[in-house]
Image (cartoon, rainbow, N blue to C red; front, top):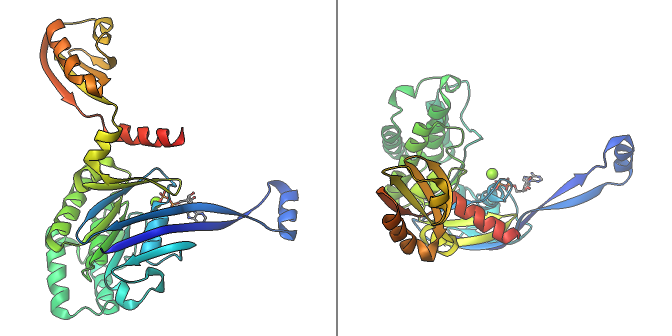
Amino acid sequence: MVISVSHLKKYYRIHKKEPGVIGSITSLISRTYENVRAVDDISFSIDEGELVGFIGPNGAGKTTTLKCLSGLLYPTSGKVSVLGYTPFERKHEYLKKISLVMGQKNQLWWDLPAIETFLLNKEIYEIADDQYKKTLNELVDLLEVESLLKVQVRKLSLGERMKMELIAALIHAPQVLFLDEPTIGLDVVMQKKMRDFIKEYNTRHASTILLTSHYMEDVRQLARRVIIIDHGKLLYDGKLDNLVKRYAKHKVLSIVLETYVSPDKLSEVGELVEYDFPHAVIRVDRGASNMAASQILQKFPVDDLNIEEPDIEDIIRDVFTKKNA
Ligand SMILES: Nc1ncnc2c1ncn2[C@@H]1O[C@H](COP(=O)(O)OP(=O)(O)O)[C@@H](O)[C@H]1O
Ligand SMILES: [Mg+2]
C-alpha cells in the first residue's frame, strides 16, 4: 500500500466578520471564528501503480486532501501516510519521491525558458547528470516540446506551459503523483494530449497517481477506480463500472427512426428525453430495458437502436442528490 488515509479531518479556522461598520468594530474587540470542515473524516488507501480519479463538486475538499497528502497542510486529525512517510514532516527524502501538480498554479520561472527551472529542480532534487538527461529526454519526447525548451515561459501558450509544468514536476521521477485539475482551461485537443501522457506515464513507470478533474472525460479515460467526495465526506470508493451498476436506475435507448413517429407515441415506451427526428432518446428503467427495446422494434419503424448506459455525469449527480436528500 502506497497511500493510506485514515479518518483524515482538515478544518480551516476562519475569522468571521459581521457586515458593516458595527461589524468591523465588534470584530476588532472580540473575534469570532468559524470552522470550515473542508475534509471531514475520510479514509482510503491506494496501492502501488494505481491511477485513481478523485472527484466531487467545487469545494468538496479535493485540493485540501491533496495538500495534506503532499505535506503542504497539517491535518486537524487523522492519519496520513505515503510511502511510509508522514507527509507534513516534509522530509527531503519524502519530497524527492512525490510531486503535486496544480493546474492553476505554476512553479516555472516566468521570465526564463523552462529549461532553467528544470535545471534548478535538478539541483534541488539532487538528480545525477545521466538520470536528469534520460528523464528529460523521455518527457520532452512524450510531450513533443523539443523546440520550446529555450523559449521564455511567458511566451508559451497555456497548453505548452502546462506541458512544461509537468516536466518540472516529473523531472525527479517521483513514485507518487498528485494531479490537481491538470487539464483545467485547456482546449479539447490539449486535454486529450495531457490525458494520453498521464496514461502512458502511469503504465511506463508504474507510478501511483491520484487525479482530480472537473472533466469526467479525464476520469472516464484514465481511472478505473474513483473516489467521490462531497462536503468533505467520502461518498463512494470503487470501480467506475460498479458505480454505474449500483447507482444508475435507468438505461438509455438511442433510436434512429425510419419514418416520423409522434412524440406522444414514443413516450408510451419510456421518458422521451430528446427528439430530433430521426433521432430519439428514451430513458427507461434499468430492469425493463430489454422489454422496452423489443417493444420499440415491434411498434415503430426503426433504423437503428442502441441500449446505452447513462452519462457518468448524470449518475454522479444522482449520487449527490441522493446523499443530500
Ligand atoms: N485556506 C482556506 N481557508 C479557509 N477555507 C478554505 C481554504 N481553502 C479551502 N477552503 C474551503 O474548504 C472547502 C474545500 O475546499 P477545496 O479543498 O479547495 O475543495 P475542492 O478542491 O474540492 O474544490 C471549501 O469550502 C473551501 O472554501
Ligand atoms: Mg480544488
